[in-house]
Length: 187
Image 1 (tube, one colour):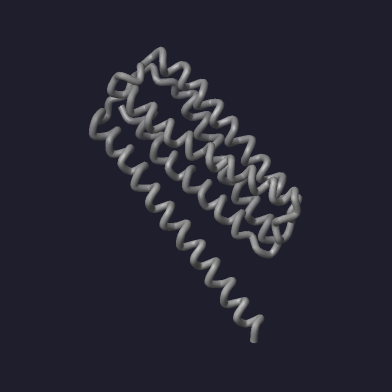
Image 2: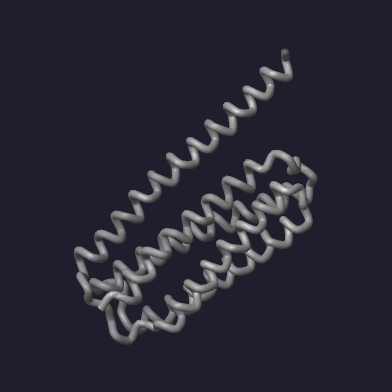
């Protein structure tokens, strides 16, 4: 009888965790939607012609590839393959760090081309900065997962931590799928 209650309790906890994560993602989506709306409302289809399209495409490609590696980490964890999971998480971490470095390179260049005080500059830095902050928090969570696994705290059958971080990571990628065209392609 107690094992049945434990199973029901575990199911309820996972359900509540997932529900809470979705509420968090929806609330964060409203912030990103407001930034996207502000960009389109304030600047319309205008964007500077000298915006570095190569960097934008490169960092977008890295972020989309990191979504694949994150998915592979979650699948490996669900299959009980902890070492494989670790490798995929490390690849996701590496791609995320390179993405942030690319944003940093782009910011250095963008400060010269369109200052943050201008119309496009202000919305560009707010949108990319807010997204970069969320990428950074995702990287910190991936780091915590790796640390937990290293310390032996990750039970293989239960992978809520991995699932939650990967869902958050996918959310970050989906946001960029909307931000990229709004920043780089509309003209």
